[in-house]
Image (tube, rainbow, N blue to C red; front, side):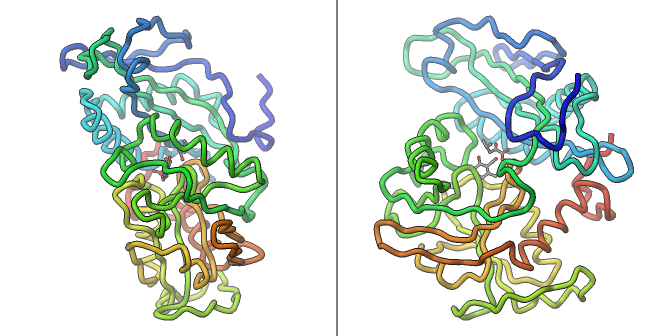
Length: 357
Ligand code: PLP
Ligand code: COI
């Protein structure tokens, strides 16, 4: 095997093993590793017929010290449990999830990319309903499958800006629907928006389905906006050297949407904690699209895209383009570095976010 790690994109590379565990009538069996990447699945399985499926995404990093760190897998386990309950599936126990991830890692060690290649080992845990059923309703049999794959950056190129286009004509998820859960149906529902945006050279910024006034999510990532406290004008682009005192950001606001239809991002949660530690004011509330004019920096955040700066947002319905910045700004850059320093073991993991293997 000869993988050009630095050239990897966010694409599937076949691992040696996947890990599987079955559940029947509420009882989970032990996970096992297998080379077989195909499922023998009944054509009427509830995952196929009615979309009884949830998934997750998490990463293992090869650190500066050569050790491998799995980032906050317990949070992914909890979120999968929430998604499972929402779709009437038996939630995989936390220990079983952790064992399955560790087994998937240990069986595919040669796929953990070296440090400083920009690539990581991504795990896609998948939970599917396998009971054959024609009547509409949940089944009683499930399977947890962990699919590992080395991946490169979600947005190709190192740390650079991406542009978004507002879409008020496609809803990703309803306010009381499944948007807050990581279920496959949300993604199929978003294709109309994301593919239309891609066709125009942008990524899709979804608005809330009820009023279409507020920012919901960036394609498959949360949105964050950065600005100077309590006011609208843009902050002059300023360089904040890495070593500057922590309270330098005390006048900076970190805004992120509060919405019942967005996925509670583990990356966003981590960044909010880091931002607070740097002295920023973290605000979660409805963010009207027009407020984009007040941000000096903005970014999409998620496991796949980490923290991807946004340079501009087009709002075709209003005929407005929000120019946010020309290049990654100082605060987003600093947050990005703080997060990656922990993930790559360059600083002490005071939050205990990484399991070192
Ligand atoms: N929002 C959506 C719709 C996502 O698919 C993801 C990716 O998992 C995120 C946000 C970011 O969540 P996380 O940081 O937990 O990966
Ligand atoms: C992730 O960030 O891990 C995701 O799952 C987003 C997307 C690639 C589905």
